[in-house]
Image (tube, rainbow over all chains, first blue to last red; front, side, top):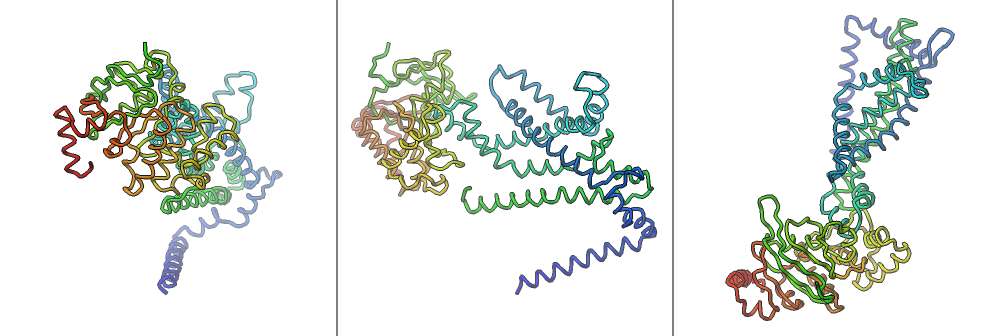
Length: 274
Length: 251
């Protein structure tokens, strides 16, 4: 009975809170104006489907560019970040210069705002007038910037994961005659990756949204399409649409991350293993 | 320089961790098929000594020969050395993300280049010999401590080592699980395996060892056959140690 009571209580409190927020919004002096400029159904629909003859693009279609940038960046980040993490964890004097380079790299790209990296690559590299390299689309420079910036973050996630594997596992692997690399590949990494999947996915949720920043280079992604709509029609409802399509993109990944974290906790409590 | 019957020779071995001197001059010789038990209080350097023989710890001073070859010389490939020396740890250190069979076959396949099918067949034979035939697909955390430690021993044996180093392999076990692991070690000794064993099980040491070495403050204080060391110890420090553990009911 108490669970039913809990359900009733939570439902009632949710309804009350939402109603209070709605009332606050509706009672605000500028409510009507805001509803018209941000939540106009007509403008939301128009910006979602787009109309090139009127000079604006479909926000929904533009999202496809965000998805492609995200997917390309994700794969590259996973590889580059791992390389950096392994170099930073490496031992031995021979690796010293590489360790310094990767440490500086991580410091720089974690410290510089992503938007500046995007601007630097997007406007700087074409200006170099290099064959092939300078002739790419805005989306390519955008992906390159995302990869540079996020690899710095993700390499730290990898590093935390590698450090979370106990030294005794390294000792066990090395004592069997496994080389440093073989031990890393078959013993350390598989255990590290299991622990870092939730924080890794968390970074990728953030990456999905940050593809919107590439719009400043002129790439027609969802946010840029919304901007063009609002500039053309003088209504901000297109931004609301952009927000909604990004939510549709990120929420499934967020739920999946929660699911993995919960599963991991259950497993640890049960003491069982996959 | 060394006789071929000598499995391990250690001369003037010193090792410190920062300011903490753990080994302060160890000389020890282990003949082929000989079993030496290292006894002594925690912190006396037993584990560090074993880890040095396996090159898991870089040494500060001294030399170590393995099967007549100096392994502390410059340019020696540590991975090659470790193929000949198996080590089993107090805390088992099985790979938690692999089942028993994969734990045992990983090194033969990746280090020796044994074909997987052959490695698995060999692993199954070893598992059967040590009463683990039905455990090959289990993951380590489904096993009892005693079973995990036996798997760890099998994993080391799968590399066909010529020497086994056992580092307090029963210290992390519940008392009722100690016997099954000690039985495995007895079987290894009976089969002629050369072993260097750090242990707190005095009865077991008395029973299995050809020689017992008592360590204190990083030195071998006394080195004698068990019958002699346990019944008529010569050094005052050995006597004190044995009196303490007799009082604690461990002997």
